[in-house]
Length: 332
Image 1 (cartoon, rainbow, N blue to C red):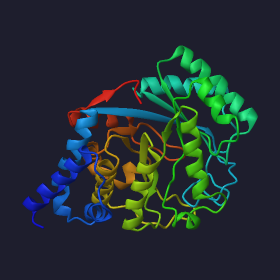
Image 2 (image 1 turned 180 degrees about the horizontal axis):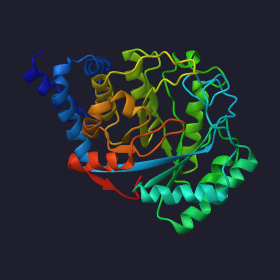
Image 3 (image 1 turned 120 degrees about the vertical axis):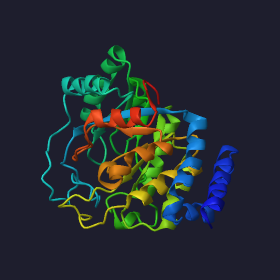
Image 4 (image 1 turned 90 degrees about the vertical axis):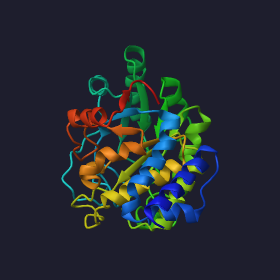
């Protein structure tokens, strides 16, 4: 299709999304394989949907790596896993004062959501006690939303987090069900789905996303978007693999920047009313095209990730200002 025809085609996708209609698999694939020359009309159509639900607001989130390394899982993308030889810091759950200091830093970065993330299969009761104690004080003293990402939850743990004041719980699907065994063998795709469903039943907002660039096909990327639509995840972080030396996926190639933008547009059309967050790996995959991501996404992580560095906070704030967007504070 020529550029003019493409523009109208993408606009029709936006209209379907706004009408609550689900894109077909063929339409989803058309986004991912579109000619690169169609990128701007595609992003303009995605922006129609993004603007309808979120205007020009951008939600900022900050991560603290609350427990690093020492993880028994074998996730091929992760520098903290048992199969990784990457030189990362290893420490047990951070104490209350350190978690509180992280919350104050999140506020200084203009983040509305503070994400407490811990490596491991799931929290012990002692670890949960430490996190719950910190969360209660944060909720009492700071105007922050709290997102917890602590792995698989045992009976009673979701209730405790909800009672402490956790607004959102993150547990990513990461990849497609078919591709999952090639990425991780120490837990299953279905266990991840069950965890997301569990946190929903206890009143926490479900956050679940993906990592693009782990050998999945275009068909599987579309499948991931449909899976998250079906799960009704409120927040969808879209990570692009940052291949870390020492991990099984260290030789995986970078996702081309234009392809990454098409992926963001795809998720906006399929999950139109949801928070779409440009997450880990955006700096090394999107590179100079990072500002364009805001036409489809309405959320960013600011600062460093778990074991990899993000860009300067001021650079993120500058992108938002230069693109004519505005930081949204204290909102899911």
